[in-house]
Image (tube, rainbow, N blue to C red; front, side, top):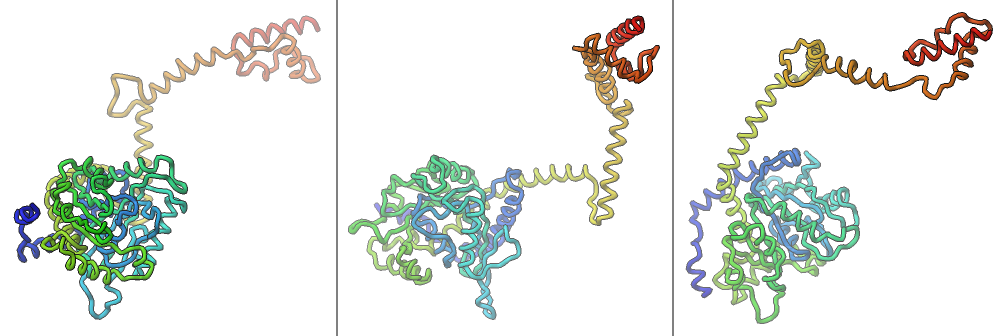
Length: 457
């Protein structure tokens, strides 16, 4: 059955087709990457979903090893517990080799540190860790805010990957009790979009039917049309078993297929085994294992890189018409809104004059509205000066009339106030300070008390 499957598999693309795909990839993927950087700075205001590859897997499934092997350098935080605590958008950019300056062929750039190049990949790891701690804390907390990293190298193909936190079951450190649900929600916010290719990473030494990555991919992509399966740790499977049927899609079929890889072990990492040597060892493993003879297109990091590049290019070509339409529509809307604000002004003096002009027009419009001279006069409700007049005459006056300024004031209080207001002399009239601003009822009471006071002198 495996041989029948192999015979029905699509043939390898011709050299001309591969060259054409590479040319498209080298031109289209960088443009999409630039759009992603722009939309990342806009934040949630962007409603356009751009093509990308999201890497999904459970904790310790080998996601970091796969990404480092694709880059060919050690640059990701590693450890026995959760390491990826923020989404890492990794843009691999193929950079032609420069023989005169070979040491400067590879470097990384962070979007949050624009203009700074990292030639030491150990510094890239430290910056990822530091930026993660700044946002998510230093005690295993998780955040959904992205870190965006570009790696320029002659050893990579143009690919955009999003490394998502691994699915974990038990909270540790500062993680909330519902950490698993939060991580699943974060992952689903990426992979549910039709423009996202899902790279589902599953270890070969666990039951593939229980894979968290494949389970989430099936929810977001029921027909498996945009899911690529990656089976890691093939070299530590139980003796007498292999992953051939998994790689051929005989167990859990995926339209985009599977690729098997061999990771560096923690011991390899501790002993500083280079990725170059690890890739050579991986190639030797697949060459010497009879179970994987005849299925070379399903095995190894180099095959995975080519497959991802080709699928991403094809995916971009598929979604490009709709993407172009949405961008054009939003561009037209923004251009119309921008035209309302007038021509741009570059100089500081011009900007100040422009601001004063806007404020003067606002004051003029406000004054016209208050005076009832604006062009758009409402026939439905009171507005402008008429509304202000209504408030003062019908609401404010009524409220004042309900207030009794002489409330809780006795005749004796008024008599005492009259004596204090007249000073050392007797007065025939009520002192001005006692009746200015008083209501009619209060004045009546004041004059009545004053008359009674004068009669008793």
